Length: 372
Image 1 (cartoon, rainbow, N blue to C red):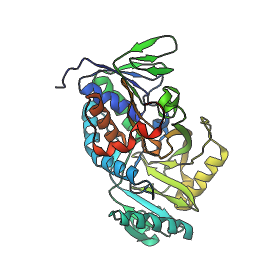
Image 2: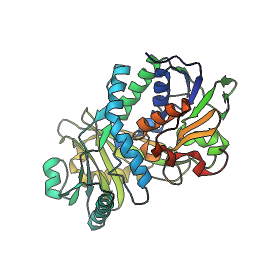
Image 3: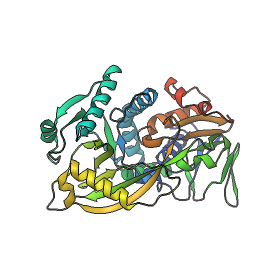
Image 4: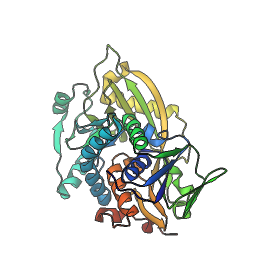
């Protein structure tokens, strides 16, 4: 039984982070309302669902790697709790990740990643193209080498969102299907009304910057286009592992789904709040995917969508108090799903007026400057 608490918490934003914070807070005894005109419809709905801190490691982002690795370790327990609370599958996949390269420049980039991880005391397994094709026969002859990252995970984003909505409802979260226009201590301003509360948690993704002065110009949208495909009866099955890496210098990933599907992404463009899918984006994604997995040309193209990653200047999220009564849990860039467990834990600690774990210090809003 959760402890009954008197505080009313309003979570603004119904993506993976907002839904998780709302569910966990309600399960801990808080009265919780979630404000979003269409929960689970934004960037979280579009996401590939990779949980891959090692595969995405890059020099200069050591704090992000540590944060992601800690959150990755919590995903199996988080997924189990989610399944039990919702009665639905969490969508977690445990097969691991292959990071591949095609030409010499791609393989040099993989060498840099492997060397960087080795200097941090983290190891990955180097594989030849032949060894990669033994693991994943769908990979084509253009794949010349790569790295195996068995500890990385993935999640079916849409299954997880369905489960999170169900878990939140079961925990008693009230859903307010309106758009928040402004946040201040003790209140969330809607189009024609106000929701009063004790604490507001801003988890509105790329739109968080418009809700509070401390986040203005600090959270920017980064557009990503994604394709969803499904195997036809005559086609080779997709890989069982996530396959990702540079293809002639362009980032590409293929994330399998349980139904013979695959999510293909992702472009990355700084174009404001534009969410239209471009011909060039689709062309590049399909061309790179066919280089990695020639049989994908026989797949059915189900969907082409674009989402807006909420990004910060240092790619770290923003988790902490903006002022008394207003918390931020936003700015997760590519790592919304990956960082959800550690973010939810940190927000719960802050709601209890406790000090979150030391890793969260790197995400404190004070690093952004401005009003905190």
